[in-house]
Image (cartoon, rainbow, N blue to C red; front, side, top):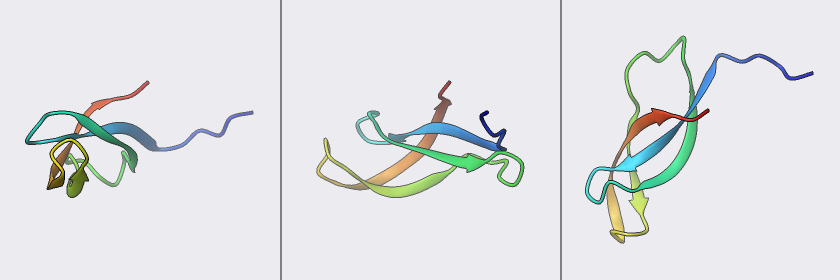
Length: 57
């Protein structure tokens, strides 16, 4: 049987080209604000800011 968790799964979207590059998860109880990180975008070919977007099902 599947285990219930307090984690949500979401996409990380590049701020420059607006493409979804990464899928990650975070604890929805401890972290209320949206995640923002500097990641490498393979379409821009440089390190850009990526932000959390819509939740996956």
